[in-house]
Length: 101
Image (spheres, rainbow, N blue to C red):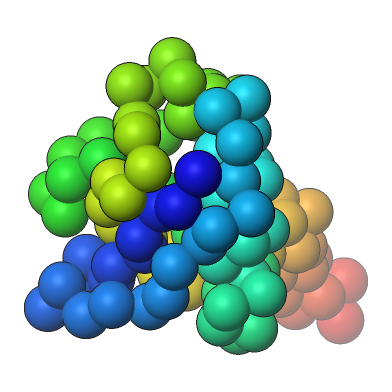
């Protein structure tokens, strides 16, 4: 199955994934997009059916979405992602350090 990948900003083509099957999941698509564009690792991607549509879940298959060969998917770059532990430490370490000093 061949799926065309476009960016949500400006509808710029990113590339074509031709190694997908009907049973492939959105997670597989994200891995393929990472191969096309190395800076977009899977946690940083939002895959959509339409440029302004809802984000698809990672466990959905291409067949369940009704995609056929030649269909388009849109990718949005969510930016760098950090873990909740990092956010927690950054939020509370400063005041704790000042209090204990």
